[in-house]
Amino acid sequence: MELLTHITDYISPIYNQTSKDTFSRLPFDKYFKLLNLYVNQTQCNINNYAIFRLDDIKNDVEFVNDYSTFSDSNTYQVIYYDTTDKSYLFQAFGFTDMYELIISNQNRYVFIPVMFSIKDNKTGHATMLIIDKQTNIIRFFDSNGLTKGIINNNIIDKFLKTYIDIFNITFNETYIYIEQQSWLGITNHNEINKYILNSSNLKNNDVNAGHCMIFTLIIAHLLSKEKFELNNIITELNQIKQNELLDLVMGYTERAIENLKLIDF
Image (cartoon, rainbow, N blue to C red; front, side, top):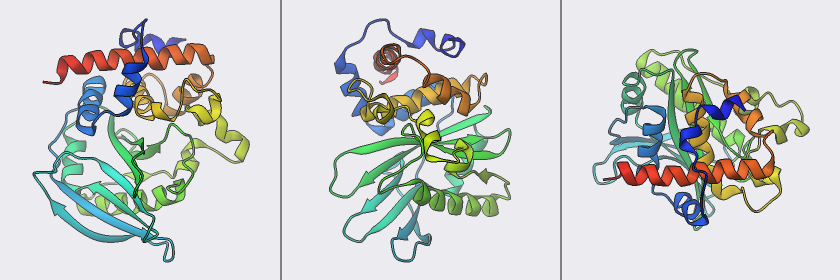
């Protein structure tokens, strides 16, 4: 498959479960460092954050506040659900820091991880914001396909559309956030499966939800080569046989851990 020839050197022929366990629990700063290396992206120091809130009753996004920090700098953008208040919080990069991140990178794409978290739940989920500077289009990628569950695509779209609208007004930009269902081109439920890269589609215990972080890295890495479009990358990966996909994901994970050891000092 031509798609994979562009990342062959990043796939180890041998692997073990330890690497997968390590990567699935990788701290965000280490993951972001590896991502920036793989996609040749300049990392800016993030000290400022903006907080947005959405509750189940009003169903409207409101800007709560912004804050600066040094002790907790370079953390992630996260969408958090409070099971007690029945509300969602979106911790986003401050608008100035976001602007600096975009303009400091000369590549076509800028990749920004977004994490999901639920109160009193130790598990999380890794997703990604993909900014196309050539077309001024911004998309949200989830290896689970169309995002469902408590934090679903409707919640994400509301947050990100508000965030990007304010960003555009602040810096006189013209970025367009495309809602997840729209850029996936899903018109009926049966079309969702071809965009799912995790276990809900593969129906096995080898490639599963624990690989969400590595899938975001693979997608960003391939897209950064500027040879393929996002939809094509996802659908082609989904056509790989299960045992070959396992070798790809685990081999890529193994090499990623090896590379992280070289740069993490």
